Length: 282
Image (tube, rainbow, N blue to C red; front, side, top):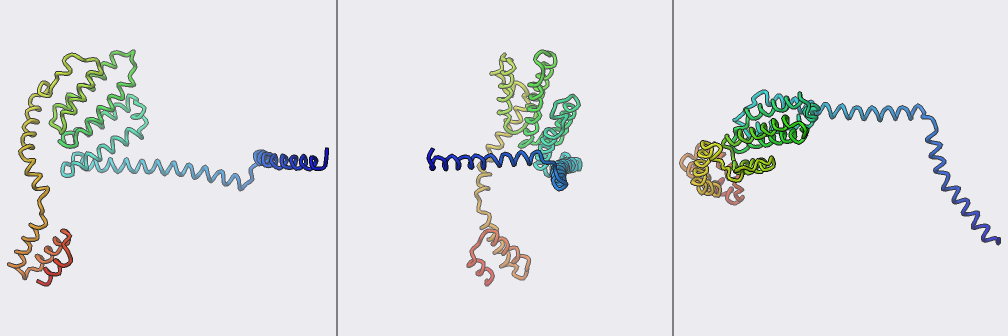
């Protein structure tokens, strides 16, 4: 072996030794007992984790209490009906997600969820434009229960199918918006239950004639008013209001409140500075 080969082998041995040292150091650190500072840091990390869990739970409880308080104050607040429906939807979603009994579909949890849905329907289920959101959430919940029902328990399965069918019929008995899509969903659901007899020929008028009649009249009224609503939507109200204020200030220039409101209306209408200065100087 010449001198160069000897130097090469020596260098490789040193490199292998250096690479093995970190692994050895890591094993020594793993086997080394924890010091008081290490124990303190470990306890602090566990405490921070517990505090974080406690904060999350506290936030959930605060949100639940807030929703319950707002709904208990006025559950069927039709002065702010859209807000009421939004609150009910948030409350229902919260209970379904965070209530263990409801989430696990225990008998007590199912009863609690159904009572909650019925309260929501009583409060906001009749709202024409948005009430269907609560009905659909209720049906989805009952459908989820049906999917978890044991196939061998034919009686329980049939009872649950009847419950969902009853929900469809109840919703279709209320003149809500977009009833045609609800009827389509009902037909599709009946087809899934293999109830194919005359399912394709079912029409709303066949189920609830009075609802279909009211719905048809409402559609006719809407179609008669639609072009008027479009004109109102495209109407340049700013010019009309400005003309009224202009006439009012000319007839009653001593009334300061008119001038103030005139200037505010011009600012809200994004009037140019030149026009504003002309009004002020006039």
